[in-house]
Amino acid sequence: MALNSPIELRVLDRIDAVSAEHWDGLLAANSTPFLRHAFLAALEEHGCVGGNTGWQVAHLAIYPTDSDKPIGLMPLYLKSHSYGEYVFDWSWAEAYSQHGMQYYPKALSAIPFTPVQGARTLLDQGHDPERTQQWLIQGLKQLLIQNGLSSAHVLFAEQKTQAALLAQGFMARDAVQFHWNNQSYATMDAFLDQLTMKRRKNIRRERKEVEAAGVQFRHVPGEMAGQADWAFFYRCYANTYLEHHSSPYLNEEFFQEWGKQMPEYLHLIIAEKEGCPIAASLLVVDKKAPVPTAYGRYWGSIEYIPCLHFETAYYQAIEYCIREGIQVFEGGAQGQHKMARGFLPVTVQSAHWIKDPEFATAVERFLKRERAGVGAYVDELAEHSPLKSTTVLP
Image 1 (cartoon, rainbow, N blue to C red):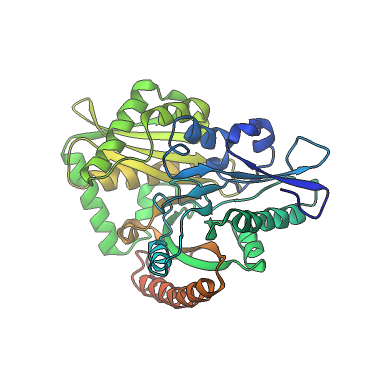
Image 2: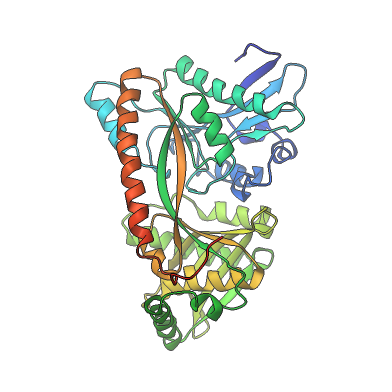
């Protein structure tokens, strides 16, 4: 696909069409580990995306006409459903269907199954990155028009990319996540002292309940995690889906591969009782980011113990962040219950471009109403902050 310039836009049906060196060489400091070539390649190699998953790989790449080295990249999938996105547009698809129109396939630029904010365009800083970004966004629109797609959606882009998308006619959609912030706490008790008495007492009660059940914890850095550790973690992860009468998006082969390819970014927390593992959670940790961040990804258990989820997925992770100097702990999508554990609401955005003008107008009206509702929700949450009123946030 040619644009009006000495560059070419290519649609790649596999990430390995670009070398890991060239892909990762375009990553910015705020890209997050989830945008690395190894992560996305493992998803493709082990069948978590592609094939009949409803995630058709269609990464966009900008190449100079005289070079085989890309100067711009965008992770992209053609979706035949809306599962695994964490930005819900099922009502939009239903409205299309009611009017005899096809909503799927749609174009989606996102990290599969990962509601984490970060870069969505990878840009060579030596080749006018702002212009390259414009080419990528224009190319995304052309892809829709030339292939009869209904819409394009860019989820959880960082602010600069979001602004570029809005400048080209995309519509913003707000959502709320819950993040924990490290105020240079020296210990877990120092953090708890910043909470209201009610929240502090509740957390200490929950922790004592798990301790009284005889549960101990083993922290396993990714470099130390073996095949058996990943096999047990996957057993816990899959059991969570089973308990919710669902099927896991990811398979054990993916986790084993991820553990081999990116161990420095991974940290397992394994709960044990009488020497036997009973639960596990996974942190993805980016210590070299401008703001060192941990991402709580998955958790699961094979034995029910009250409050074990909170201890394994939250309290142990917070202690780890304090110990390692991690500044932000993202607890994942949704979950107002996280506020009771010291997390605070954060507004994040996605960007949407609807090709049909009438539907675009209808969606714009919907988003305006929804944005007001999200704002009111955040204001309401602020009235129930778990922090003491004198606590100062960054």
